[in-house]
Image 1 (cartoon, rainbow, N blue to C red):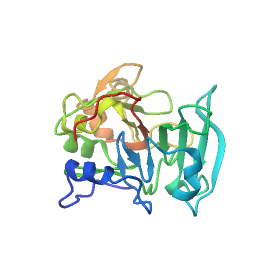
Image 2 (cartoon, one colour):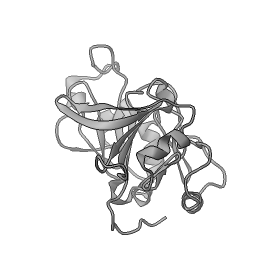
Image 3 (cartoon, rainbow, N blue to C red):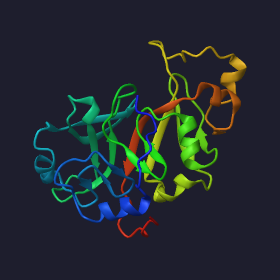
Image 4 (cartoon, one colour):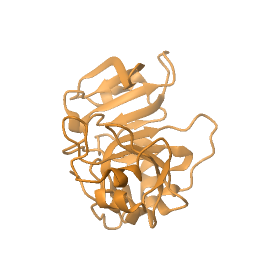
Length: 233
């Protein structure tokens, strides 16, 4: 799993400057929330993908988000989980642009090459809850865990990561280690589990949740709608 890795000299201002240079000539695997995922930007069209990913397979398939919820999407490098993207478009026309990009979808363990450098570290699949709190400078609020799956970040609660999450452009799913039956592998009492489960907001300061110290299991990047105000960088 990819842990938080300090990146000397890298600041949000630097990321903004890189993002303003347009699509990268080679995939640098960087996520700039709301701006780009590697070479994919808000102005990318489907015809660009073969140029942006010359060595990867690109195919249109259906993306199942939840049972019964299926969306058309374009899969990039689906056969290589550590490099895969699932792109949902703003429409069916040839000049449609990316609406949201699922990064390494289904890659709960192991390496995912895409990562979001932030001041003081890095966000990637495998980043621990404790590391997210450190990067944020304080606890934050997440959705309670469901049956057999984790929750997602609801609010950074005015923490440092809120600055890069303008327009809720960075969505993180967080979960603990689970066995094949979907049960958490850590031995927690039912009372402990009850403090961070259910369809409700939960603070990451919850003692049992901190004991579990779950990890980022999925990253979704959303592009702001046309006309949205620029995000501070």
